[in-house]
Amino acid sequence: MPKTTFTVVIPLYNKEREIEATLRSVLAQNRQPEEIVVVDDGSTDRSAEVVRRIGSPLVRLIQQPNAGVSAARNRGIAEARSSHIALLDGDDGWEPGYLAAMERLIDDYPDCGLYCAGFTIESHDGCFPASGLDRRGVVENFFRDSAHRYIAIPSASCIPRRVFDTIGGFPAGMKIAEDLYLWIEIARRYRVCYTPERLVRYSRIAQNRSASGYTPERTDFSFEKLYNPDAPEEEREFIARAALGKALVLSVKGGTEEAARAARFFHWTKTYRRTLRKVRLLNRLPVAWRGPLLDAYNALAWRLARKGL
Image (tube, rainbow, N blue to C red; front, side, top):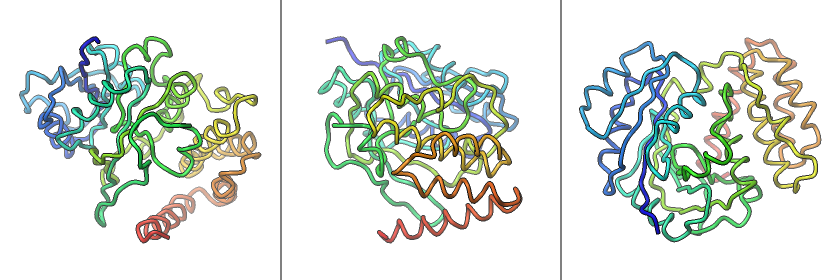
C-alpha cells in the first residue's frame, strides 16, 4: 500500500489574531504533516507577517490577490505534493491526535473519497460538541445522515489527491456554501468515511468568517445547476438545504432577488420547510432589519440546542 502523506492547506484572509494558534495546532500534531501550504488571499492586515514569524520549515506561504476562499483552497491544492489534502481554516484548530486518526482511517478504509472527524464548536459562551455520528467507518448514506447532523466541515476533512484530479476542486468564484457543493460532488461518486473522535475545534468567535464579508459572486457554479431531479430524495433534499442556507446569507446581505430565486427553485423541499419560510420572511423585510432579526433567531436556537431542546 502506498505511503499516506499529508499536505495541510490553509486559506488565509485577515486572520492575524487567529492564524498563529491555528498553525501551532498543526505543528503540535503527534503525526506531523509533510508540508503546510498557507495561501494568503490578499490579506490587508498582518496575517502573512504572523505566518513568516512562525519560522517552521514545514510552512510554505503563498500570496495572491484576493480571489475568494475557493480560489485560495484550489491554489493550495494545486501546490500540494502529498497524497492527501487536509483542509484547515485559518481560525480553527486541531487536537494533537487529529492527523494520526486520519491516517488510521485512511489505512482502514483506503478507497473512500472523503475522510471526516467529529469536532467541538467554540463560541463566546463556551464550547460544546457538534452533533455527529456515533460510529467509526464508512457512512451508510452521506446525504441522509447529514440531514440533522454534522459529518463534514472543511477543517475536519481530508481528501485524497486523486479525488481532486477526477472531479476538480472547489467551485471557482463561489464564496458561500462552497464546501457543501464539493461534498455533494464527492459523495455522488465516492464513499465517505467518518470517525466520531472530536479532534477539531471549530470557531464561531472569529469575526472574519467567509460569509461575513460577502460580495456578489461571479461564478458559473450554482446549486440549481448541480441539482438532479432524478437523484434520490435524500440527495435532492441535501442540495435544497445547502441552497436555502446560502439564500439566508444572500438575503441578509441584500441579495433579495438571488435569495428569492433559490426559494422558488427549491420550494418543493419537505425537510427544510423552516429554512424556506425564513428566506421568504426575510425577503419581505427591509434589508436593515434582516441581519439583526436572523441573529436574534440564531442566538435563541443556539441556546436551545445547547440545552438539548
